[in-house]
Image (cartoon, rainbow, N blue to C red; front, side, top):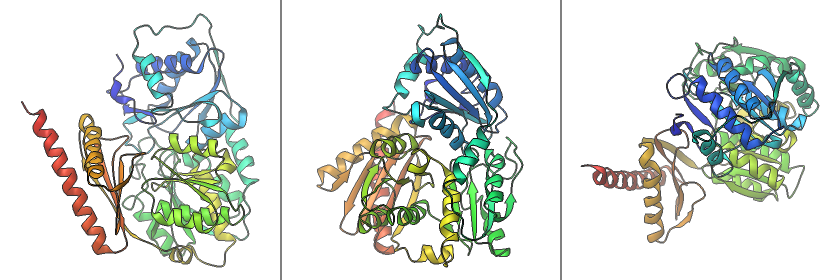
Length: 458
């Protein structure tokens, strides 16, 4: 039987050959096909992972046995999979990827029409139930599979009609040996940027570094930007659905600060426009939106939920602290490649450096800490912490974990959607207040976790 642990909040993910096999992929494909419906037209793509082609083949067989007509778009970045659904008017789509996880992992991002992502509370439970059901059987109607090889060209044409580059920039990119290698250099060439590439060969073993853009993995890119006097650096993850920006001084631009730059660009043109952001973003995001006459919409963390709000609310732009960015321009879905080109456009239209633009944005002191917590405990622990804050009269937001507001800042405690962890995010006016908040939150988390551990001991 398929392991139920591979079904996450907004994707399916596990270690290939241990948690996730080709037989599992067949059953998941069959279940997804039943969910989407007979005669549904869907697209499917995969990133560069070594297990991708095998899992894709098995998934396709399952979907075809469910009566679906499948269009294989090849090895692509995740935003191109989303694009294929919305642009082509398909009923759904599937990306075979484990995003930023190590190379031995793989999985599936499942979508409905318009690139809407299937997640917890929006279809994932249905697919999980169908996959695990002993009643799951092929349909009497058989579907078919075809190939479509021009999707990257279609995407390039679509994107470059939306981008207006005013002057040539010097750009450094770290493609993490991932799916971005097939698209990012093409766009930079058309934009007439001078660019340097790190880890630019597609390789599912990710030899350069793990396929996650963070301060550690992007050290080489930071050095490149400074040494070569580049205007901007951009680091992508394995399936190119995250873009982390490095300013001209070699500093990482936090995802929520990058979102503020996008908000200023879009709301300067569309007063009253809506912006979606998630609960761990700095309050400077909401303050900037309101200052520019926009409407802030707060979401739980995760692309499934933000995409849903982007489309339902017709929002102009959205983003996450983790450097996922969303745009009405590209049908509302998560698109780091468009984000990269849009940031280049913004910078090319300004006489300021990226570091100057970032420095103009007011900052609060913030920190994120991660704590190990078993998957079977993390949600119970956070539920108890919710009760703790409410019993003491704190103002709280509970759309994702619990966010409690104190006189001098706020603290967010939430279970990770993808790993056995609980995350604490805190923000305050001063560094002293931030440290107080973190100590307070850590103490509450440790005491709550200890109570649960004592309860489950024999």
